[in-house]
Length: 263
Image (cartoon, rainbow, N blue to C red; front, side, top):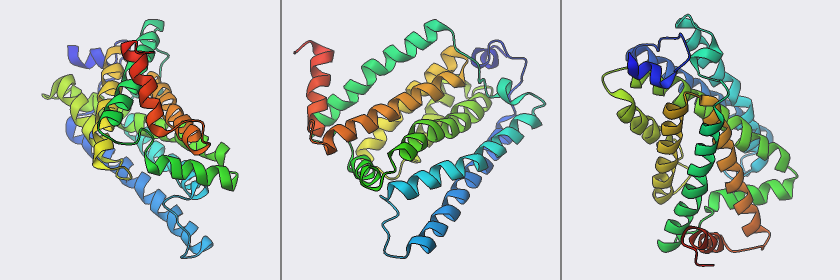
């Protein structure tokens, strides 16, 4: 029981069993993906077969924002089956200031670190998918919608599902918090199929960081906000590259300087 309280230290809620957690998590994922597919099909019908839906920022924004309620409704039902308030079950509480500081410090180190690793590996710091979507948003006047989709809707759904619903249920089982953090991070990373395998490894690192902070703070709200910050930084990096303010690898050079005092 101590492991359960470590994830929700001030909540009277008892996590669902591992079987129920997996079923509800799968249901939320299916509802989310199903809504995305339905909206994408509608967009393809509206725009015509020649439209490049995979990099059209307007379509991506509509799909991401429009599909979010489908997943959140299922997650809310899951919380209600535990006879617990949604806010309490998902740990949507304000984190302690020390945990906010810890989260910011964590990503102040992690973001430049993965940038440096990308640079050393000869990879672009800002993946082509992100720069292409930003360019599409800029040219199509969809930047505000893209920001809402990536900085608000995506973190809300993904953190509610993986760190709010799935992680506590797995952590309360024989797996324990450590394995639960690793498994949820891996599952979350594998969702990012729009990126090359190299970037999935980076996503895994971020997923572990989100999971650890969720366990440490007892707050999913913290990881939602930090996830939004990470996505915003990624979008700003893409904007700087597209607008010619720097090269994608230039970020890594500055990250190296920040980490190791080289400039």
